[in-house]
Image 1 (cartoon, rainbow over the protein chains, first blue to last red):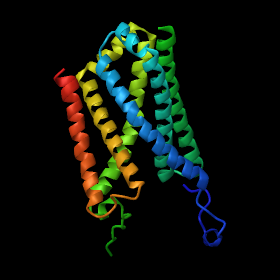
Image 2 (image 1 turned 60 degrees about the horizontal axis):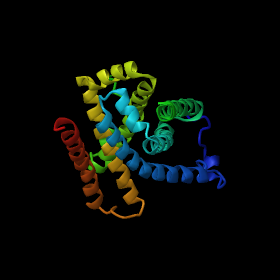
Image 3 (image 1 turned 180 degrees about the horizontal axis):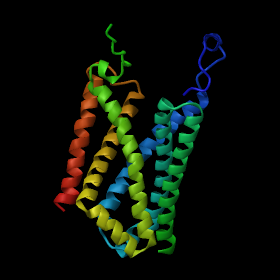
Image 4 (image 1 turned 180 degrees about the vertical axis):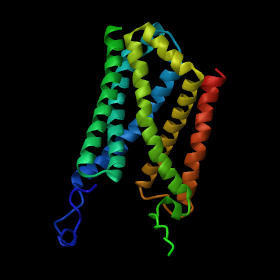
Length: 130
Length: 128
């Protein structure tokens, strides 16, 4: 599924390389930093689910509607989405290349955007409009 | 003239199964599971934003035996991926990489994830 096959001339050329170095380092750092922040997200998630699972809407709005819960939750959902897209990219790079890779990577971005926007939008609605 | 079976590509089956390799595979698998599982959290939030009726419906599905089974698996998946990520964080400082150490950390990830998940469900669900 590789678009351009790797030939001897490509390997012999010292200017050839496998990918974008700075972008890969950024990918690595981003994944580690967002991953560490996700530990905080898991704590908040555990608190919310334990406190609110099966509860009525009024109870839920009272907890998530609190700005000090709702706003951090929105930020953390965004960070989780970045971590999701970054992590799935690692997997996709292992199995796809060329046009197919660009297609599945587009689907990946789409899914992460939808989850982030739906989650953040829902929390924003609860925080600002009840 | 007998036709020989063509050799298959040497893949996972030719390697001796090690705990570090298993935990690496599980780290990726749980990552993918968490990727899908985040949609469940988003659906719950969206239902809550929409109104009581939608929230009641979602609560009914998540509260059913199948929903509880999925949420239990999701809990373990999240905990395992978190511990696996912390293990990578430790390795980033180029420590705990020697033979024995890395295996010990891999076993700790597995044992820790099971213990933490059972602890969370015992304290907050079964005993609550």
